[in-house]
Image (tube, rainbow, N blue to C red; front, top):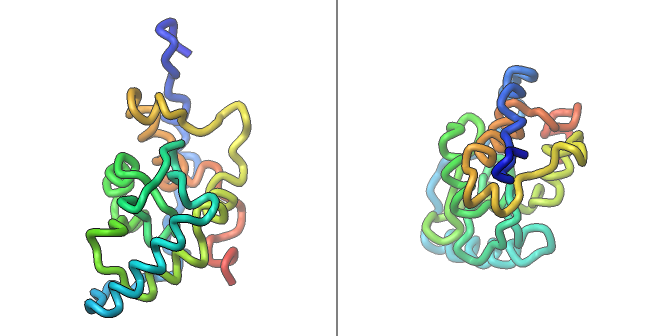
Amino acid sequence: LRASGRRVCTYDGLLAQKPRTMSQMPSMSNYKADAKEADRNRKRLMALIKRPGNNRCADCPARLAQNAWASVNLGSFICFQCSGIHRNLGVHISKVRSLNLDSWNDDWVAQMERWGNARAAAYWEARLGPQEGRPSLEDSTEQNDVHKAFIRAKYEGRRWAAAAQPAEWIA
């Protein structure tokens, strides 16, 4: 903590520690769903977002509503603020879609059903120690540098990821 009471970013130097790519993640289809498929999948998504664990952002304590976002290839539901940070990671790491604004295809929804926030946290935060901790709500709203560094270390640097590859967790 700084003298001002704000947290100091402790994640900055961690990105170079595990230079891996997301190539081990299952490939995601890019086709656009037709209206019928999109409507069916919107209902499935609204049911998924209500499940325990999925109603809070995967990367901060923000509560999610029906206007949430998701990282399709990571299988995580995220808030609007985190969606912007995920977009800046690049689509080779995180493919961000809106639950309401995008037309979801069957493959994307199946990926969200396979993972969800609880399973994704178990994988991506498997080695996250209590001394490191996740960003607080204050960090998420007032100290965006702490929040960005956490998300970059988590996904791009794979700082706390389990030893196995993501595909092995859903096999």
